[in-house]
Length: 262
Ligand SMILES: C[S@@+](CC[C@H](N)C(=O)[O-])C[C@H]1O[C@@H](n2cnc3c(N)ncnc32)[C@H](O)[C@@H]1O
Ligand SMILES: Nc1nc2[nH]cc(C(=O)O)c2c(=O)[nH]1
Ligand code: SF4
Ligand SMILES: [Mg+2]
Image (cartoon, rainbow, N blue to C red; front, side, top):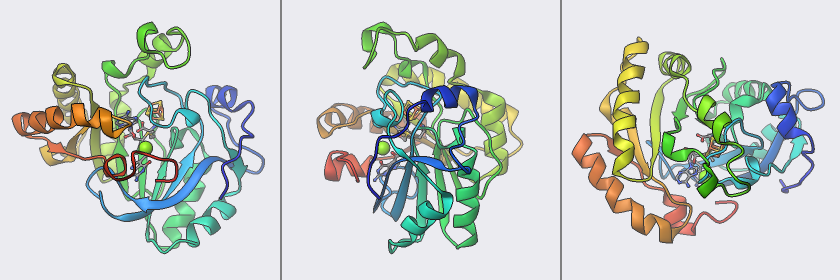
């Protein structure tokens, strides 16, 4: 499926949360087959469906063209499903951008579930939707993700307040944990992130009925490139040992340096 660039107005639509394209279509940035690079299913051949548009703006976002400058084209759920079926994989990863800003993501997940696919949804955990999700791969955003003026990839910190207001919603995180098999996958920039992670995990454990065992809490090194991971990888691995949480690699960065389509 080609990458196109017809998402004029998508940002405004995400803000109004009435983002449905014509007939409930989905804005797709890319669709490809690779190995799941992150989390408890790392290494599993999977089809990736990357939607465009996000309600947050992490300064380090490795999918810039779905968040800071969203591009893509609108496809029907049937066309996306047909494109998934051209690959020989039985796992699908729905990601973005933030896939759960789109109501049509529910229709896509239901179609894929009906066809027997295992579905993982990569989400920032600020939006709950009732859908056929086999693994909710939730990546709550820490204070270190906020695009302050000094590390804004596009402007001068204009998104910082909105990002800060939206990035954490404990009741929504608890609802995801209570409804779906969940992993909490934190992007870690350094040891100074650990206090916030510990506090947030405690709050989610208090708010949720379901348990959140330590091996469902994953620490992932921040890094869009091999060079950056060379700096963060070992620091984060040591933190996982120290705190008793799980470490997750970023296989697609190690293998392919996060090139498009990987
Ligand atoms: C691009 S996001 C899309 C899904 C959703 N918006 C989210 O943030 O979870 C996919 C995954 O990549 C992670 N990620 C994004 N940029 C990253 C970076 N520079 N280093 C490590 N992980 C990153 C996110 O935290 C998330 O787990
Ligand atoms: N191989 C590979 N694994 C991934 N796991 C989560 C990804 C994402 O961008 O959400 C991703 C990705 O972009 N590529
Ligand atoms: S929430 Fe996800 S897609 Fe949105 S800016 Fe952050 S990493 Fe990128
Ligand atoms: Mg990625």
